[in-house]
Image 1 (cartoon, rainbow, N blue to C red):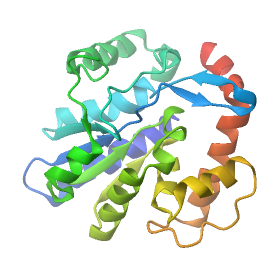
Image 2 (image 1 turned 180 degrees about the vertical axis):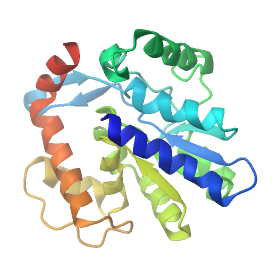
Image 3 (image 1 turned 135 degrees about the vertical axis):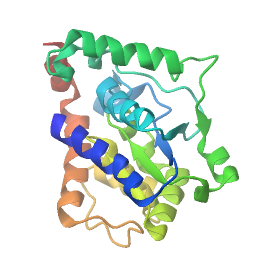
Length: 231
């Protein structure tokens, strides 16, 4: 997880090398605070604190502008198990500092959150943004993988050759670029999905494997992940 986060930071900061001006980075999060599991069970989740705030702090410190968005414009939810020093190399102070920055930005506030909807992003224009970042946590498995708005965004960024960074469970959002993403994800959940076919934003075969595996692992072993997070 630490290596993936470092790669995300490097990818996002890499945009500075191509522009003399401050860049505008779009961070896309899930609206959901849960993941529906098999047998009607529900797994409380959200984004992971380190996967969101470490890249965000790096971007802000470098002078870039960060815009936060979710499909419907709802304030995202932090997975409470991610507020643990184990995700910050055992550094309790670092964890608290990132949590304080999250609170300062009011990202999760139901009243004052600066988060906008992806429909608003479309109104502003994709051209306004220089890069997009999708952090992990299990929440993207609930809605980003089949969101038409996410699919349009990623397809546009791919067509323009713009920086696109996704971490941990974030790559599941790539499935949204399929012609029938909801249908495909239903088949995937049932273990019946075949080849990814005509994905507009087509990753490598390794990435395809990781996306499929991440989805199945989250549905089948979410409780195991929770126990690991707790200690």
